[in-house]
Length: 84
Image (cartoon, rainbow, N blue to C red):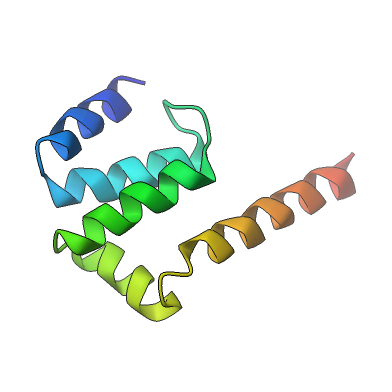
């Protein structure tokens, strides 16, 4: 939780890399409640601020980060059902 809080503070201050890491935290639910919407929001902000990794994802998928996240959530749900 501490890392996510530090990433949030740095991202709020305009640090694009921290915003990208914060998007990852939201996507995976590490230190914060998992939120696809927040992951997309912070990923887009990081891309707009010049973070290369976030730009790659946004550019590759045409701002379709929500689709990527939705597919991963569906896959994770299927994996949980198959392993039960």
